[in-house]
Length: 120
Image 1 (tube, rainbow, N blue to C red):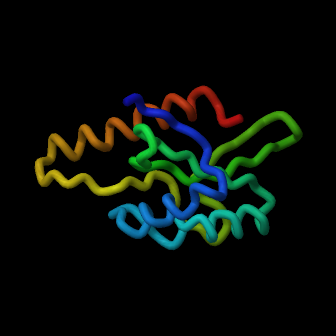
Image 2 (image 1 turned 90 degrees about the horizontal axis):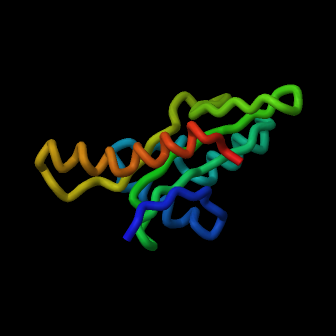
Image 3 (image 1 turned 60 degrees about the vertical axis):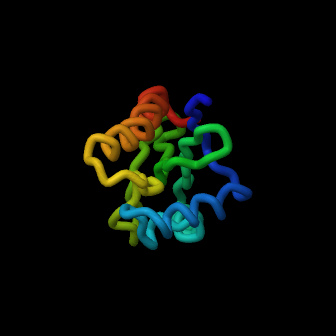
């Protein structure tokens, strides 16, 4: 099974919110309802990128995209009233540091690749 990164749609939000609740990185600012509400009121496009292995959500990243002057897109993990966002992962079952780092690497590497290429 390969790793796939895709933008989550509303039907995926319950999986995202479940992960946020279990994640060490998870916060109110990662919840899909908060992300959508801030995007709507701040005039930015909310984006939740999920990293999947098959049908399993491993982790992801909450972002806000702002198009300036119709051409330049800036992407950030923070927005008004949102001091923290960004990376969120399901916890690994392993207590070994190396295994935890490999788990994070499997999630972060494809996310970085997508962000370098640009969010569509």
